[in-house]
Image (cartoon, rainbow, N blue to C red; front, side, top):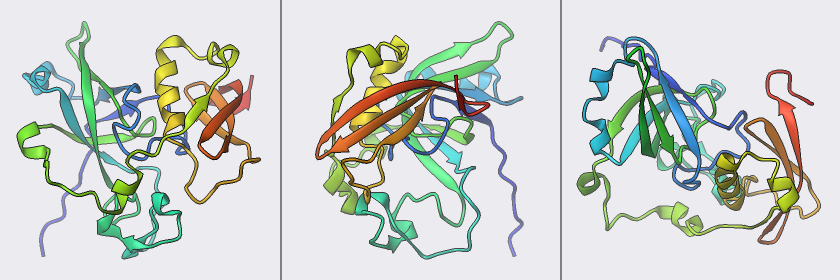
Length: 237
């Protein structure tokens, strides 16, 4: 029997998603989103990142830390298939898998160096929950990682799924300017579960320190309200 090894997080991500609802289903779907990766000691030393600026994109390996522990199931129900059709767990990117390891490709925006010498990374396009443990980082290498003849199976049918977003200017103005583009990208990507399609239903999505309430009718998403919330106390201020 092989010796079991414990995988330790090297850091965690800081971003605007305080709950699972609303997180893009794949990385890069909301390319305007910004996030920062904070590293634990001793992994934040500058030498560990020497040369990383030469790469435009990175692979993040992370822990689906908020996923409940369940007995192994060989099949899962991908949201993009309406939540009813089952496929093999290894033919999906479901968080419910033997080891809760996720994979995300992000764009490297900035390597931040603090006065004490520690390093953090600013990235865009991440599809992670705030506080998600990061297990490893690897550079994205275009000539090996991008396969031009690759096929995407059932996921390809939803590659161009987008909604038209009606966000009244008076409500959008409540969102900080540097977060507006990311929020609009997330809403256009349709945060609802695929099996929910009720035009009168009001959905609530937490983003940064706000809760965005909206309705969706056909291909149009209409924002109804923006409320500031305290994410620690979970109450409206």
